[in-house]
Length: 555
Image (cartoon, rainbow, N blue to C red; front, side, top):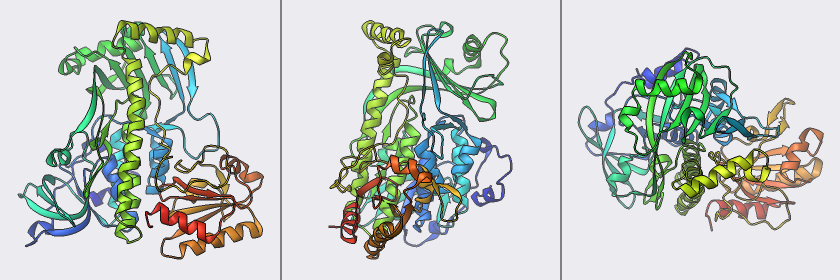
């Protein structure tokens, strides 16, 4: 099928694991000299699709290359965090993700067969999206592909494999293999979103460095009806799987994801056989359990990253740039955040709003975020899979104490779940000159809150501030807010669009005011990726303009 046919199948039941897209010869393959495109994205997984959609929505034409012509199979990445869902909202497919996904906030931790405690990842109300949804990766790719099919600025080419990369001063030359033979294509910039076995990384002679953990986990997707809530259940050393760990997650379509720790010495090919998996599942669920095995895989833990995510005119994002163990749901979520960070910066440079130096900040910021994810992932892995008897004794003592002592629960680590990085040290931030309390510091992702829209209907702050442009959130009423809004409009008149969202100081907006420590006249300037880049108690056009210049690396 052709990609554009997906646009006509919305509402139908689509088996995304069985879709096969047609290879089509492109006129670029017959060009006498290589065609030049502004941006080429390599890899049509969640990260590449998200980046292509984001760029297209910013009026940047994108060529999206994929060496295959199918979407993923099996659950793979399944936990998508609130921040990622907020990004999907801006990309036009958040509702589909949430409607299909299984929403959850609660996690339960067991030691042997006893629950030792539970936690709520979103204990407060007032957010449009849940802490997490569970949704198989093939649905995420399918919904993103459907969104891409409706954007004429995305040119998705299946069965186009990059086989050569040569960097020049003003472009990158790609050699691309197809069923019709090779052709060459030039790109102003290239985004490598081609996964952990990145061919782009190999072609440039680069590598990811870090640590591989000598342990293996078996993933089993099991279809069954199970009377358990939509929660994350994690067992340390249960009686049904002694001396190992197990994780259980509910997915859509009555499919449950089970991760069994199986040890470094296990044979991956043997462990994927049904005769090895079925007894493990029955040990967890009971001998009489009725289920169908849908998919299985074996993975090892690795925590690693490239030294630099920017390599000239090539940018690495997602698993091609960094890898973490799956506990904590940090892989796909951080990859989508990579894409969002890169998209607005590429668009600003290509639209002559910012110099090339802005693209350096992509590497600085996302390398910082990757280090944070790797640190958390490494700590979780060390706790889940202790490598010495002393480490195991310490872990088990912590688990015993956690039953009745709150302090010990802070030491239990079954995977610190994904949160967006607060980019406190980013050079794009304007330091505070006024006193504020709370977590909405420069570099933080803006917090959501309920608002009343201009039409009088209930809405959400982040959706009102989701234009993809710089946005000023202005708090107050009357002349105070009018004066601040005029200052923002004047600052944005110099060629960088700035949207304005007005938030009254009243009972209906008390939660927003509290989360932003706002008073009448308070202004928060949000970057296009909704990170706070500046805030003031009172703002004039001069300081807003200066903050915009700083956020765009314009001296």
